[in-house]
Image (tube, rainbow, N blue to C red; front, side, top):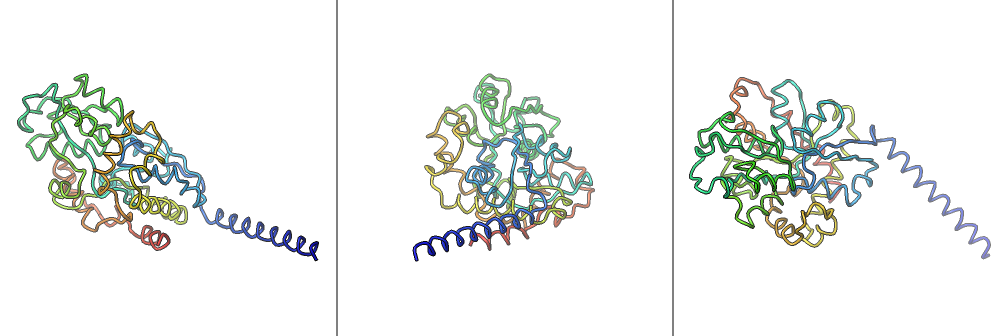
Amino acid sequence: MKIRLKKFAAIAGMTAIGILATSSSAWAQALEKQKVSIAVGGKNLFYYLPLTIAEQLGYFKDEGLQVEISDFAGGAKALQALVGGSADVVSGAFEHTINMQAKNQVITAFVLQGRAPQIVFGVSSKTMPNYKSIADLKGKKIGVTAPGSSTNIVANFVLAKGGLKPSDVSFIGVGTAAGALSALRSGQIDAISNLDPVVTMLQQKNEIKVIADTRTLKDTNELFGGPMPAATLYTTEAFLKKNPNTSQALTNAMVRALHWLQKAGPSDIVKVVPESYQLGDRALYLETFTKVREALSPDGRFPEAGAQTALKTLQAFEPELSGKNIDLSRTFTNELVAKANAKVK
């Protein structure tokens, strides 16, 4: 009797393994593309925290994906990787979908990571101690993560509201970490448009005077006049059409990360995020997370009015956009996140 039971258990175990292997194989085959390359401009930033969570907690692997993330100095560089064909998807700012369509290249955002840009524009207390208005920035050097990135776009918008054109200043790429801190502290730049944790570190020592802050929904709405989509996952329209299952798998992983972040505490974040992202100050990193938490999307969905707000923002300093026929319905889709949220719940 014992022998029969052992034999039965062995057969049952082998059958279960066979079923798992078969289902796993079928799952992998369902993905049009298992290996996916994602380009990001400043992976250490809170702006892209959902991407880091999805990677570190193995959510991409759970979806059968092998994701390779390449980190660049700024969003514009990440976009170039997509356009150049070295990246399949970008973790980047929503505004790029509009600018690229104006150049007759349709790219579509399919997961919203941030519902507030989290970008802060400030002037140096060292080189501009007597700053009074935007006009004082004429002829000055402004540090951005990379020229053409979302930090550059927000800086352009702030300047436009103050009566200055992008050509009235000089933009310098300083990255998103120690290089940005060094550039401001050494006097290489007179103002900075950057994100946390960099900004909070500068504020802590009163090294900058904040002119514009988009880390909260309230401040974001006041500056832009409506909801402003921030970090997204975006790719070419062609990629989404060719790889629907792969795109859904990416979305599932990201939405799962967004849901996790809604429940996670600061101590949970520190356990998951690489130590190097904390720039040598864990306590400040934790404090900063608490500040920017509401800027993270709770479910990955794009607000319907968001695309219009982004277009108006860009038109404020890019007059050539006024004559372009931008189809905002092609700049984003909520179809994949709707399915992902149904799965998570």
